[in-house]
Image 1 (cartoon, rainbow, N blue to C red):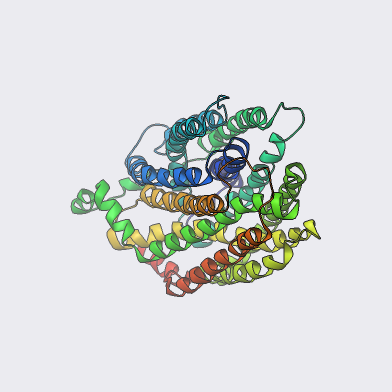
Image 2: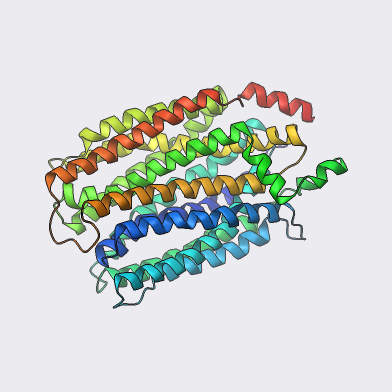
Length: 457
């Protein structure tokens, strides 16, 4: 049986997720309030931009995954990419918010397009090898759940920070939102570099399993297109990818509309007051999520990853129904109850999803005789970002149709806000229900994975 990973390895790998999650979540959370509300850029343009970036990711993510799968150096096959990607990700994130003053809305969307393209290219170079490193650190079914408890613990903690970024841009020490965004963006970029470098510096990367003794015909099949085709034909991986993409789309809709519902429905246009409640809401979500990670990890080991993952999705349906009643102007902080309930869903989904993809790598090797963690990490990363981008696109279209395509000086009608609340609550609920039903067809139970492990030994 595989030797257990040291606490130091797990901790160093987990800290890398601070950079991954901040880099993935912060642009979506900040672009609408900064570029739309403060600068008047059409919300639909912003949503469309993030969706277009997924076309670029569809090329770069699998390519970087394949290259890192087949790369070797004295520093390891993942670490050089992680170092380069972490540095560039931090620099280009800061660049997104160093926007010049006085541009037209078209000028601002052009600036945003260029900086976001550079940023997401850098994020691919960093995040895909980071995911792949985790998938190959251990072959043990339960040890994987323990390993991914560490990035799952730091994921909500990092997103607490993301939740307060907009609040920080609104502080009176800054001349205005634009100046606040510049300073906050620069500091956040610096943190991305620091946390991104930790896995490269302190994780003992496992020797490249791509060099295992394989028949020559198997090695010959390990081409980029063949790897991509076979990974996309893997049934359990497709189920995970489709589910997580839908879940993240729903989460992105929630994340974007949450600002507008608080600013215009809960607080009647008071941005400063809304920013405080928004900060406390996401602090509740991610603080509780971090606390329940150990419990989710133990439940996953006891009952299996599939069972707990599926149960969490059905729990999410109930959370979305309750949300309709918990967001009210009469009791603004009642939404923290929603945050507490949503936290359980968030912790379970992102801990168990990663651990299940590591299982998929073993399942795939049992069928094809090839290890390709990088390709699976790339496709998963693309699905992750696609879900967020689709959510941003849907949010942008919704906001544009109800008038959020320029600076807002008046409160939308009650009918408009009620429509937004309905979308905020019930569209994610339908997505969670569909994903939960889909997982009845997921084949990799704990019993099946132990069977695969016994054959490998």
